[in-house]
Amino acid sequence: MSTKISLIGCGKMGSALLSGWLERFPDLEFGVVEPGQLSDALENKVLHKHSAEELAAYIKDCAAVILAVKPQIMSDVCIGLKPFLPSSALVLSIAAGQSLANFESYLSPDQPIVRAMPNTPAAIGQGMSVAIANAAVTEDQKNLAADLLGAAGLFEWVEDESLLNAVTAVSGSGPAYIFYFIEALEQAALEAGLPAPLATTLARQTVIGSAALAADQADTPAATLRENVTSPGGTTAAALDVLMNGEFQDILTKAILAAKNRGEELS
Image: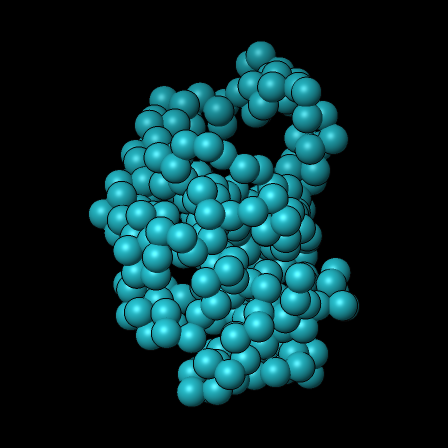
């Protein structure tokens, strides 16, 4: 199998994955098509940065072409790519909302295609990726996709594509919810009278430490971990009463369903 990989689109998600791949796979050759400027760290490591015009010559013997462009322009990108794309090359998409059927219509039902949803913690090897393959994908290609996505953190295959929009809503978009929670916790700390530097440190480290504890005690339900911190009638209980009576769970569920529905619209 060729050791050449083409990455089309190197924005936030593409850059997050590429930075990990360059560290983990020194024997693979990555060519990048990105109209914008790569970060200095990536610019110095990528062997080939191509214009769209140069892409045709590069991809003719690529093992895989990774599509990391916005869903709204995916059809145009695929249609432009189709005349040059080897019929045996793996196409790996990390775009939200675009279904396998969409890609098969843009390219061919016989094109090996994997639809995946990673998230941005992939940049530090702490990502979560879920994927589904079409019938044309070989075992070797599934292994390549699993290696690439697994290098960025945890990875799971699914057999039911309808799960991917929910995966996107929970995990793909999930880091934004966590960052928003950190923002809100920082602001609340300021309102409680803490100085800004300490508020920032406390908010971030509390989330980091809690996530690490949840990972370390993976067999313990989150509800049990919460209860372990909560003394009846104590300070934590007072705060949780506000969150629970304020319908925090309902608001979060509505947010997840809004993201899921938007993914379905993009499909």
